[in-house]
Image 1 (cartoon, rainbow, N blue to C red):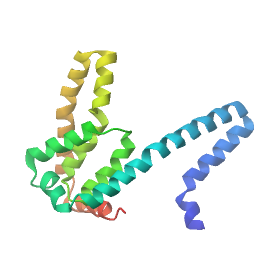
Image 2: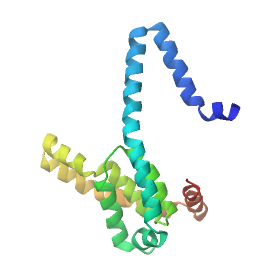
Image 3: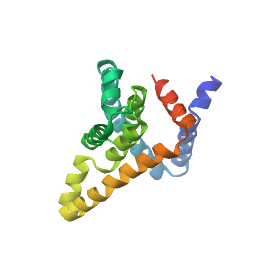
Image 4: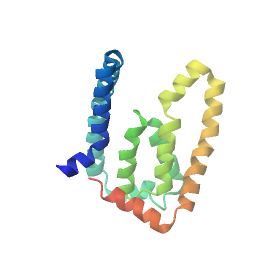
Length: 178
């Protein structure tokens, strides 16, 4: 029981804070409760399909295939594939992290996984279309062109800065994912 409480202590603290806010200011408490419920329902609509897809990816894509296309010797093709996967993705950024963990677990190169996360966060196709329609094509193209080298630079610098032990630790955590 103690371990369960320790594991969910932040969640429990937030519930207590919400309850106190509701007691002392019912209007704000009700608004907070409504926002919380909307977020929970949204997450419940997004997360299960993603985990189903992750399970299928884990079972259907052999490790050797992942290593060939995104592994240490994948070269420019691996970069392009990682960038395309991230740009073509849909959903909030927090969905990218379990996918990134699976990519690492399957033997993808760390820099390719970082490129995937960077592309997911900044170059998603729906985001680009929204920017083009609301801020204009010039803005969208400029931001896109600036983001590509930024993503690559961050991924390669991170790959170089991390020590061998740190990289092994990252892969170890990813391989222990279930």
